[in-house]
Length: 433
Image (cartoon, rainbow, N blue to C red; front, side, top):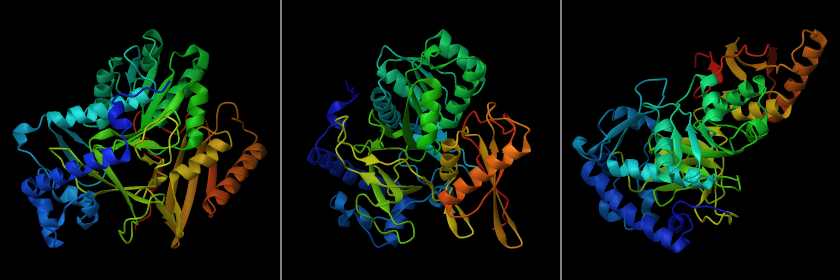
């Protein structure tokens, strides 16, 4: 039986949801115009005033915000409330330039935790469950968001944070955790470690996992589900919008329902910025309809996906976003071809490898090179050079078929690629572009 945390919103008819979005949107645009001079100037530069915005149908008149704007406005330039009304900040795990710092009022925190509670409930969570939160705590949003959502549902919450893998497994078993929340790459690592300890799916109390914060493939999902004997649910979010819980997967596992009473989604052509019709693939753009402290309008996520309103067997009417195939800023352009790490991962998992790999891109004599280091599993590890050569050739062929370009593949020993306890570092780009 499908469970809902806030059924009246999750299953609202289109007319009701449109009315809610409309009312919140008009209020939010006025809030931003009155309190965020940085964005008001962007509106004025585009020749847009409050009088031009009469309903959510006018959203395309508004200017976009990008990560560059967030860096330019750092730290307080996009703040929508007095600092004394803010109760928390979180920050992105960005590696270049200034980090993005997002602010929250108490209302913002409550809204975010309710979104995460919807995700946990959709994964089958109730107040009878034990939820182990193995996302990082601190400035990263993962730990705090799912922790708060777990509390709202009434689960017994184990705030393990990430790392100390053997202790994680001890708590999972000793406290009989039924739901695990972490990044998919860490879930794969936990599953690998459990296998080494002789633990099979029937020995693990878990029934569900909620995994997000990085792109992962369907093949990786199946791998985790088989190793742990669980149902693996996707969850999506960005620090800029609040964190995980912007959208979440239901029992159908065919895309993530967007909490569209709080976040309005558009798909645009990333080059022309034109809004694309439903079902088109493009860049995902979000407007936060009721965030007070950090109210972003038309924020370009750089995630490439599409939206669907096909009827869902779970009964939810919330629009679905398909699993992002990657981010336009994570996308590698190699010899003129668009390459996403998730495509390489799919080839590996299809051929029986674990998701432990590293992509190294370089430029030699003005030509891009693509090297993929892939860990062999303990079962396939061998010093038979003929067998290694055969396996490498099979991967080269698989990747050429998937990507359209040739990669050099090097099989390496088990455990030789550094494990990640948070977001995995998959790509090293040595090109001086």
